[in-house]
Structure formats: C-alpha cells, structure tokens
Length: 406
Image (cartoon, rainbow, N blue to C red):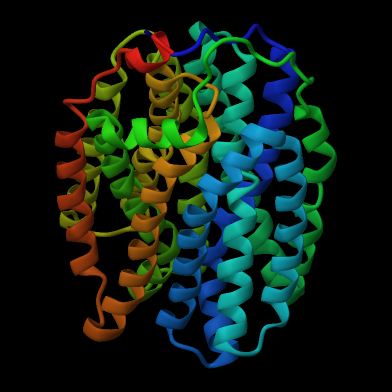
C-alpha cells in the first residue's frame, strides 16, 4: 500500500514558513560566509590552506553524520527541541572557533561543534515540520520557499560578515555571529507541533523505515546524486575567494560573487520548488546537474574578468541549492512524512561526504599542485554523472505489503 496518509495541517502555513525560513536564513547565512575567513585565519595563525579547509571538511562531514540522528530525535520528540540544542551549539562553536589557537582546537570547534549545530538547525529538521504541516500538493513549493530563505541568508549575511571582519577583526566577528545564532532559540518555539493522538493499526518502525529506504534503488540514486551536489557547492563556496585572489582580484570580487550566488539562488530554489508541482522532479535534478557542469566548463574556458565571475556566480546561484526542494520532496513523495527528517538526514549524509571531499581536496590539491584546476574538472565530471543517475528515479509512492497484511 502507499505511504501512510498525511496528517491534516497542525500549524498554520504562514507560521511554518515564516519561522522555518527565518531559522534557515540564519543557519545557512552564517555558514555560507566561512570562506571569507580562510585568508585572515591562515595568515594570522600561520596555518596552511589545507588546515583551514580540513576543519571545514570535518564540519561538513559531522553535519552529515549527525543529520540522521538529529532527524530521528526530531521525528520522535519534536523538531523544536533539536533546534534549540543546535542553536546553543552554533553559538558556542563560533565563540570557540574565535579563540582556538591550535589546529586541533580549530577543527574541534569549527569542524565538530559547528557541524553538529548545523545538523540540528538546517534543512532536514525544518523540512520535517514543513512536510507534516503543509498539504501534499503544496509541499514542493513550501520547501522551495524555505530553501530560498537559506539563499537569501547567503545574500544578506555575506556583506555583513565581510564588513564585520574588516571593522572588528575576524575573531570579534565570529563572536558577533555566535550571538546572532542564538536567535534560533525563540524561533524554534514557532515550530513546536501539537501533540497528536497515538496512531492505531500497524505502524512502521524506525529500523524498518531505514531498511526499506536503503533497499529501494531510487533512494540510493538520490543519495548518490546528492553527493555530487555537496562536492560542487562546498568546493566553490570555500575556495572561490582564494581562487579569485590567486587570479589577482580584490576580496570585494569574491564577496560580490558569493552574494550573487545567494541572491540568484533565491529565485532558483523557489523556481525548482514550484516546478516540482508541475513536472517530474528527477528531470529537474538532472537538468540542474548538467547545467552546473556546463557553467563550470564555460567559466574555466572564457577569459576571466570581474564580469565573467559575476555571470558565473549568477548562473551557479540559480542552480546552487535548487536540488534541495526537489530531493526532499521526492523523499516525502516516495516514503511519506513520518520519518522525513531522518530519511532526509541519511540522504544529506551523502551530500556531506561530498562536501567533505570538496572542501578538503580543494585545499589538498592546491597545496600539492599550486592550482585548483584538477578539482574544477572533477566537479564537471561529477555533474555529468549526477545528471545521468537521477534519470531512472521512480517517483511513485512505495508499496508496503508487509504493513498492509500486518
């Protein structure tokens, strides 16, 4: 039989979108600017780019590892509790990142703590609430709106973060951002769902849900495609400022480029979410990945200038997080919303393994070759691969004969 019937909305659509969008704006807006800290931190501490990149790689990996567990807790005990803990970890991690004087300490704060904080304050947790409280016919659109908020956070926060670094120094700027991350605590109460009567009839367990998902080919294909997404966006987000500096551009070019990515992704994610209500989501995902590959190839082959950088940033912005609403809406469409945060967390774990490699390999290969060229071309090849493996995804709800006869 198909996944369990969706519950009727318990929180208002306006409340869910406003609070969810504000949370993602803060959590994603802060993290998108971490690439701006690469130069001042490494120069002040005397570290290599690989030291900094490894800490952010650990952050992305921890985000992915903690994601399924944060999702389990959110699905079982309420997303608002997870969001509060995540907010406190975010504030504390940023403060410790500012005062860490060793590579190990920096990796523990910027890597482990902030990775766990992001697992508890970003898409998988918020999308679980969206999925349970928004009607199925509006779910893809609502996820697009929420993902667009994360992009707006990047556009909003990057100039602010750059200004904070310039005026206050990189350490004080991190303390200020840590205080801003604590604003997620009051917003979390806006996503506090009402207690529901205990369900009757056969119910799917967490273990069965996990086994069912990983045994389903389409889930594995979505997971593999999301790996590529993580590799591409984190490599570009972390290393683009240094790549442009090596090409002779001032820091303002990188700041404007990253801000343009955030601005245009507001439109891209909203468009992807809206299109998800009208056309197969697997086609949306395949198109995004192949267009990313084309954009990177074009960027590498044309003469580089501020204009070419900004055009590249705008195009990549449209494609940046556009995979998020389509991927998560597909998980909900295939498996239902009962364990949406947890299953989205598992898919996102693959994304973050890719993010780890994108951040770390960027620094590792730069230090060994003196260039980012190899990693750029790896990103192109992976984009073509992801476009191909998303095409066979089946979007129909999964059949559960065991529950039907239980």
